[in-house]
Amino acid sequence: ISKYNNECTIFNTSYGLINSIKSGNNYDILFINPVMNVLMGDYVVYVINKLLPNNNIKFVAISSNSLKGMKEYYISKGFHNVLIKPFNKVELDFVLKNLYNKKI
Image (cartoon, rainbow, N blue to C red; front, side, top):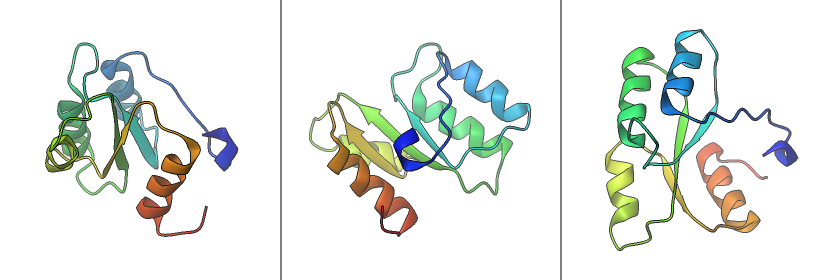
């Protein structure tokens, strides 16, 4: 992500991310594993949207679940897009371009 001139913060738990947001930290995009430890990723998205109802955060699910219909499921849970592991730079570029409607 730093290749895109963005700052990157990694959280080992969903509570770490939620506490960071409660502390006033701002994020433009959050890559979230839908199957996080302690809290599921879709619930994390729900909590963040409750804490910051008018946020502009883009939520991207990073999942190893490539079953048919999973992308639609994640989007129905509040994610803006999905990357299926393993993904490559081209796929990441595509997601970022579509999220921000700009050339990467």
